[in-house]
Length: 183
Image (cartoon, rainbow, N blue to C red; front, side, top):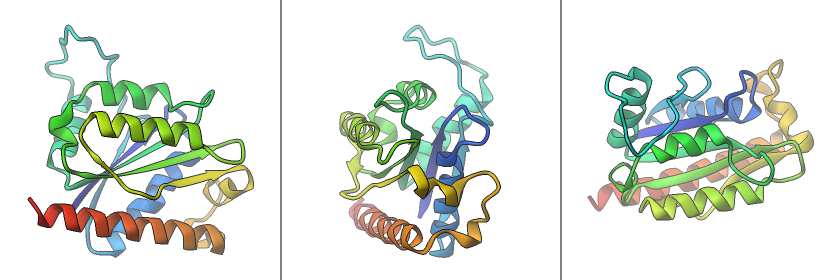
């Protein structure tokens, strides 16, 4: 399967992006193709209904990766109990043709204890785009983020967090396989 992972932060050292890299690694270990779309590295133009984005290479690559993906992971930081503006902007550029009947995993990293508000909002957006929300999500916060700080080694993720992430990624991949088989 082809999985598109959107790292939705405009912060170079975002823990949500490093968590996305870790999820990409886990998906690849299961034999799937995982493409990381890092919105910090490849920023998209501000969305406008008037369009005018012809020739914008990052937007073209973003849309192609989502369109051709069998499933999607959306990762965000939590800002003021919401998803990042850069991820919301990216999602405004697409419609149901990019998400319809695809499994979507919502992932968040928060400076506080948990990031339920951003995850709930992501799931609402996914429903509106006709995607299928994975019934589980990944939320790391507070001290749990230590495993995903810039200096942290992804080979040494804290055991409890690693177990939870692997479980959720496995559940997501199982849902994605079921949905892909039905197409």
